[in-house]
Length: 135
Image (cartoon, rainbow, N blue to C red; front, side):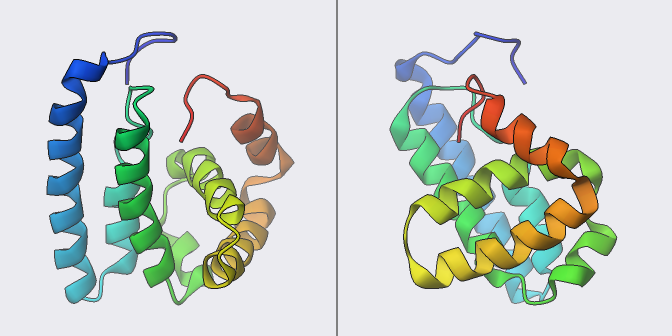
């Protein structure tokens, strides 16, 4: 990940979109193999994209959202999701809650509860306070 303040210029957005499309295909393949946690890990890797380009952020949200919604066993997810993913997952949960979409909000709240139990309030504070690496 780029250091603080280093963002990819908009003219490189196409390269980021291409990487996100590749990631999306990999996620769909994992979901077909009934590997939702692997799909979620794949979705969260390289997130957020190092750009302020909203097209890139939206495209990445779509793939993360797809993976989040595929999780059925939230407790089981945490048995194999490494703590390195917790803060970024929390950011995406808040993005999901901001959609106002009922199924998305319900799923994000289910995961949020378990994530807070596991990662603590610090995870919430870090995700809300980080205004540089936005999703």
